[in-house]
Length: 285
Picture (cartoon, rainbow, N blue to C red):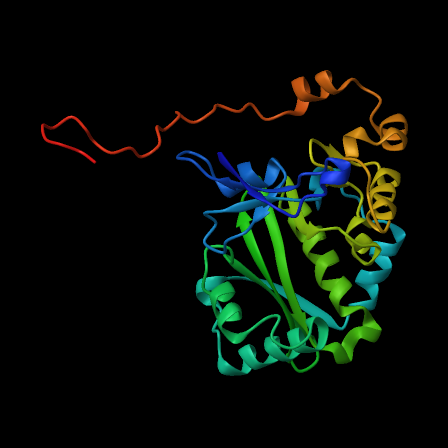
């Protein structure tokens, strides 16, 4: 992969100079390679990815907990089907259903119709996780998935009838997908970012781990430490310069972390600045 760094707002008083890290796949690489390196799709065409704190489940380690089983039992009124995107009819009714959910959950104009159409017709959506009522067959939910068997699955967006929240329909959709993909012997299911305590529900699966910027970690105390750190009004240091973080979760020397987890950068060839061409004869002013 090739990396680009897009500069964010600096805090010069604390020597904090943030960058958004973008990755671009090279020939021979697939999205599973970039997902494994800590990146999520930044483009629905899967030609640009961004580095972030995200959650994944190591599916060979997954064993349903009592809470997972409770959620699945509460969802006995539902049945799920995995459909290839080519077999899923993107009707105006389904479009309106998803837009109504997005407006209720995310706010107006966060998920526009154009953005939704792009999602449903892009390489990032290879399959649809469809949920229907067992009695009557009414469709009550769907989620978009990218599947690259057996290495990776990405559960990107879920849309469902909010009238079924009392049966934890949203959590049922995710839990049933985790269980099914584990049975199909997928290696990892990627569940998106975690930058607030509200996103901790993604960690309630055995085998859950998060990307901390340089490695995948299953230490949920570490994740909660990062979330608490995020809530501070101001930060005075980078994470790896934070003494409380290093002492509690990362005591190894930075050089050993770089040797074990770091990217190896190959600088691009320097380019000479544009200059006038004085090679031809004549007078130049």
